[in-house]
Length: 370
Ligand SMILES: *Cc1c(COP(=O)(O)O)cnc(C)c1O
Image 1: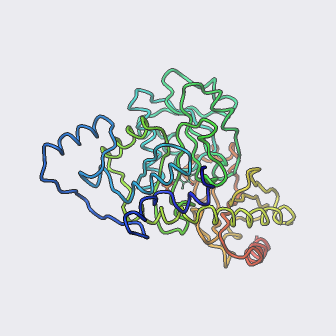
Image 2 (image 1 turned 90 degrees about the vertical axis):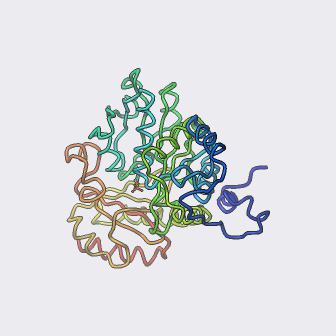
Image 3 (image 1 turned 30 degrees about the vertical axis):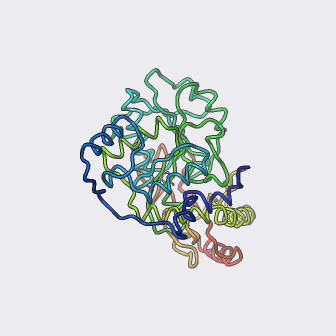
């Protein structure tokens, strides 16, 4: 019998602790792993270079605390492997480099995407070339050198949803990457619908307390080997303390996401009734994020909140509010923003764990200010 997600979130990555006589996860800060047997180390390095999963050697090859977080997230997303990085953008970069390393430099992207992801693809900084397409136009945009189809659902910041299964079916052999940062495995497991890579900015809900940065990609063994090789070569490793905190964050992920989603649903409903609000975007899937549009001055709204934290990022215990056109999506050209619903009046809110009435009271008084 496979355990429910809430159970797995608590026990994943920790299955061996009782036999080790431990309760908390061991935190290993080693940067290097001594060995008196260099010949054996040479064989292990060769094995790693050939794509094998190797522990020890050096902190840029592996870390046991980080490996526990990787095993846990892979389990929650329903994959055999996951590879962790220093941030969500380091994870995005590694996925692009992985496609490019196979001679596939072309990426098809569905907008909107997180601002920095959009910027990385648009700028071609890593030698990739992007074609932007609506979900239904993706098959026509595919080329022989397309290495990745890159999507978010619900998308940042408009919370637009797309049908992952239909997209995967339409893409044939071309791998689909779903950035699952917003939904988390609590609400959606894109691997079930055939997504080959599932990416997270672990900085958000996985960590959950706004105090740790990280990124992670769940995938199959072959892709994991490539991503570990890229992480070793480029150095964007996750710090062991971050691995520890992220694993701890996973144990409360289902409770936090469920509670924040219930709050967000109430706020979304009340926002639709509010006279200062012209549109509310709340996903059919549910979830802890709400986007809404105001006719008045969005800057005045942000300046007026007192309980809610006016800040970028999301997925923390406290409720966060931000103006995407000024902040998260500032790096996207204005015309591209406008064409993809990131209007001047759009506000994005990430519900936290506060009492919903306290949040509404704050939001309502701030809306009056705009
Ligand atoms: C924040 C975010 C990222 C980038 O993650 P960092 O940890 O900030 O590097 C990528 N995708 C989405 C959807 C995000 O919200």
